[in-house]
Length: 199
Image: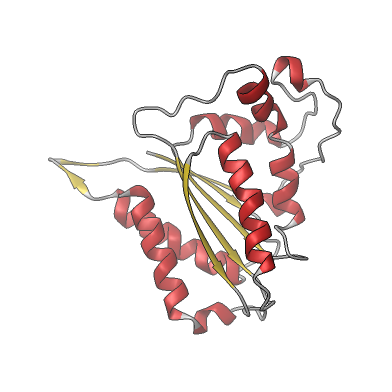
């Protein structure tokens, strides 16, 4: 089982990463359930987007005919993972009622995948196990608009990469670093969602 993680927070060991680690712990335990005499192999590919060199989409239109981006940067590591992945976890803090710039850069650069699916009629094959996703977001604000706006962006991304089933988990009023540790229900929900994703 191939699990691909797109971590969109720039803050190291912050609330978003704490919840991601809980989801990954659940995924490892859920995915390692014994099947017959063997355990399933779980292959995790994690992209910490803040550490990557990803340029913004230039809207040049080249991918509309080829499904290939002309920009050469770290997206060349991401595209194969998108095509080969079976389960996906996306994380981001809420910034200005939306996802982080680091995550949005990556999402915008999946325009070639969108072109392949909708213009060239070559969507990513779901494979025998299907493609499922999980989105985790944390914000300091109490306004639910950030959850809604972020969820819509992620839904568009997931549908573009042919992940037709996914779950959203969002938490508000957790601004200070580590504040989410005072919300055991959030930790538990992310653990269970990760476990469910791979079980």
